[in-house]
Image (cartoon, rainbow, N blue to C red):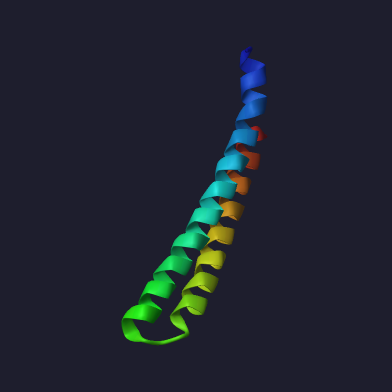
Length: 73
């Protein structure tokens, strides 16, 4: 594989890893919220922390996409 082909393939691999990172962040937030709900016998931590994890994941995706597009210029 030539250097040019590798450079073109690299952003696609980065986007794939971004998807897994986003899913993992949201999943971990959900699990943390469920654990807190069980520990403190409440029913709102899971929703709050999962929503927060979605916002964090979106922030991470946007920042990585901007970095990738900046690197390609």
